[in-house]
Length: 158
Image (cartoon, rainbow, N blue to C red; front, top):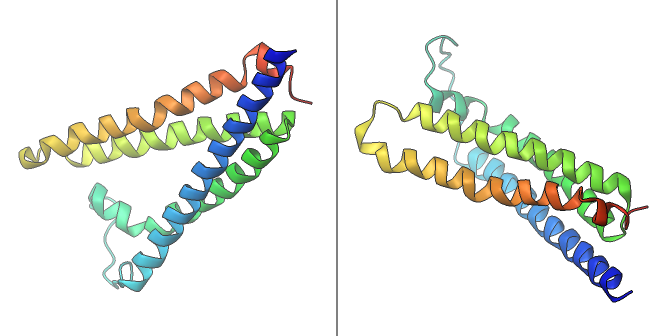
């Protein structure tokens, strides 16, 4: 009986961690949108051909929609974290799905940034940093998906 109570506390702690992570996602991307807008980025009337735009130019051109989509993902993640603490199976599945999406986003952006820096010798250290950052954020996401979908953990969700 004691192990069941311990796993219940672990699930609650994971729900708390997911809630905190989602709050960071919402706050960070919300502040990014606010700063981007207040600094006047994205207001240029220069239209570039989509074939000739650099990867960094693409990021600045699409910064607000990317941040907005991350805020939406953060809100969904927040709901999942709250209801994981209540051990709802649908929240477990939702958090697993969003974690998988975040894994893909982290690696997609990292590869995109890495490719944007190819050919620029002075940015070699930053290229390595993109991969280290991707590993830093993706390993906990993979571990979270694995843990939430273990049979011994799934039996606690209703």
